[in-house]
Image (cartoon, rainbow, N blue to C red):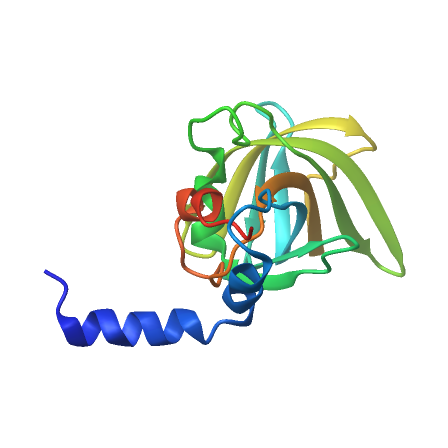
Length: 176
């Protein structure tokens, strides 16, 4: 049950959010704005099992960075555990349209880049596994200093923080 104290505190917090102030100032009749977000994950090392296409990021950062392109220029971070549900059911999920990703691997003084399609993420502690279909390049069995640049997903811009909020909340809270 929501008490008046919790309601007032929540309303005060939301009212102080700059994006919400922008949303209120723009009026309720304006169409919702859509932004395309890209995601970046980093890990200390990785393994790849070519026989089943399993890519495992070891020592993956607990934070996934996201950003949008011009003109919005929105950037932030979210818990990696909150990113995994982006593969949930729904017509606009990564389950129905798996993202491409560029995997950058540092090898000595050079960098190897592999383009893949990512599917079926599983996060266990600091190990994040994907089924990865290689589209371009050659995936090594092991690597270190990993950065994964994940292709866009279109989402409404929201007046609330992305960190720790379920994906469905992203889709429902829009700036008008």
